[in-house]
Amino acid sequence: MPHFEPVRVRGSGRRLRRLLRHRRRAVAAGLAVTAAALVAAGPREAADGARGHPAQAQGPARPHAITARVSAPVRIADAATVRLLRPGDRVDVIAAEGNGPGGDAEVVARGARVTEVPEPLDTAGESGALVVLSVPRPTAARLAGASATARLAVTLC
Image (cartoon, rainbow, N blue to C red):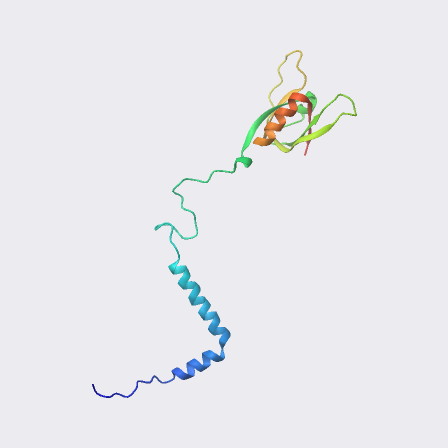
């Protein structure tokens, strides 16, 4: 094999020295190249889907059980107050135990939306009036429990 002179590329030493002088730029460029390589070589969950987004194969996500709203019919003790309500109003429902001013009162539902105010039926012996509220499921259970033991009142929000 014949003897060859070493191959030298002109100007490469200057570039290397300039790069070493500007270390911040070199580190930033290195980080950018590394980040691009990691993104390109990252795991793929679905071959046809975009990375970083969940696959829609299993259907739409279910809403959280606590945020599910239900319609709760509630009998309010004062029928005249119910006549003031309209669908879309927001009300607080208060359970008052005892008939006197010394009775305990507790807010059972806050910010419940009125969905329906049915027409009152002419039945003797029933007091109050019915109103249908849209509330979270746990609040509906509290309303049902409170209506069995206390008189319910509403305040407009």
